[in-house]
Amino acid sequence: MGKRIRIGTRESQLAVWQATKVQELLAQFHYESELVYIKSEGDIDLKTPLYEMGVQGIFTKSLDIALLNNTIDIAVHSMKDVPTQLAKGIVPAAVLERASYKDLLVYKGVNGQWAMVNGDPEVFEALFTIPDSRFTIATSSIRRKAQWLNRFPNHQLENLRGNVNTRLRKLEENNWNAAIFAAAGLERINLRPQNSIELEWMLPAPAQGAIMVVCRDADDLCLSACNNFNDSNTAICTQIERDFLRTLLGGCSTPISALAKIEHDTVIFKGNILSINGKEKVEVEKTVPVNAAEGLGKQAAEFILANGGQKIADDIRNGQ
Image 1 (tube, rainbow, N blue to C red):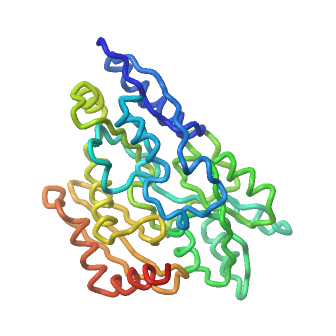
Image 2 (spheres, helix red, strand yellow; image 1 turned 180 degrees about the vertical axis):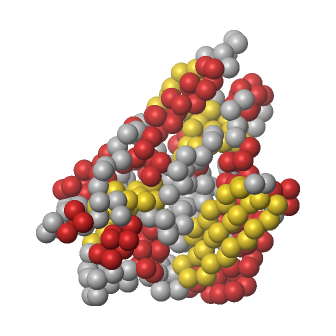
């Protein structure tokens, strides 16, 4: 079809898998493409916790620059990494069908007791709720830390940065009991360990498990090409979640979670905000018909703010 579409991607195994997936989808509609590798600031600094970097779009900024400089034609992102306000001149081109939105705990053996878990959530929960237990859990996500401490306040949380391969290796090398990952990230590149369990009670980051493709706003060819594989249900749900996040003015330093699902032409939405230490939580749940879902994320966020969420958000901002 003429122009060869240049697909911008980070260099991690997961990012390349996602970009290759988009390349395969483009090929199905007879568009030629090639991958262009771009380093991001988030890939270079693997020590500073994300919430201390103070920059939204830490994994997307380099790709945005490449797009605006016409070095690439489209960029492929884990959607949860994309700021709710895109850079001027950049627009969404497609949202792929969502994979698992769940968080996953990868656990290690401690005196043989972890063998008891064997994928059983009830046995798992019983282990972690032993009175005065002080297990050590690793994650770089302030959202995951807050939700974990809300449920297990006696546990120790450690920072864990890097791509999924690096984080799995660090879990093995350190004296930690477990680490939390996005299930979709591990499953897409066939790295989900057997010694893992889905955290059914943990609400995900807005848009977790979804892949977003962006392009320049005037690039009609790329917009048309990518529209062929845009998944409307995923686009609706992730927009609601991102509207919720934007209304709460949340970033990497604010523990905000959201999940919208469509079942039988109905949108079921759950969201929350927590204090950094997990002691305070305000949550919301709303159910509306799909055809009345516009503005749902904003409405849910306003409910949160009016019912204690504003104080949590203010306390977090004032403590920084």
